[in-house]
Length: 254
Image (cartoon, rainbow, N blue to C red):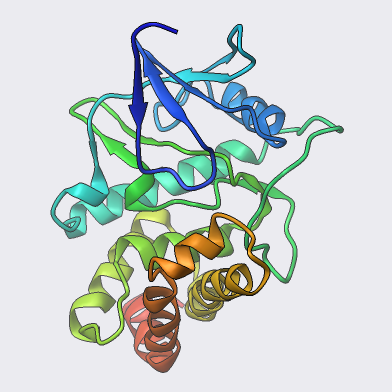
């Protein structure tokens, strides 16, 4: 098709292109479920619109102009609160979603405890487009059944962000800002640090399995060094569990 501009940065879909005000990407096995999710969220500003399929059978999505948060300076505390509010709005909106009975999901790191809330499952700065009017989460290919804390736990690692050798004195208030924006209750705050550590470790384990089995794109991403981030980050998070608990519950009404 004329006027196609190749877009880079994704890991799940192969060739993704921009055509005018739309994005075209291969219709993977989970495409029908993703389309149903985006149709459910059609009036929500934090999700791109879905326009069905084109003549080549590709998914057609709204192209959202702006900057990826990943390419911008680290979020301020106020910006982290806004991200938390966005994730809460997303989760609340999905409570009324009734998935089609015949859809296939592609959840790369399932919550071991299960969960039936359809979540994004890849909420991160590299999937958040920001402009003056909207902040929009893109790349919904991993959407599927999960839970609020499992989805938020991944977002916490990505947005704080947690890195090996981080500064707890800096990271703890940033985690608190994200969680305050979301509005977790006390019970959820007590449970979240362990969920963050487990979800982060799960991402590392996914990459290790990819190296062992050759499954793509995880095998390639392991070779590129992604596991070198996720493994040590998980250890850092687990080692400071009590500090995160204190940060999340201090001055919080019991």
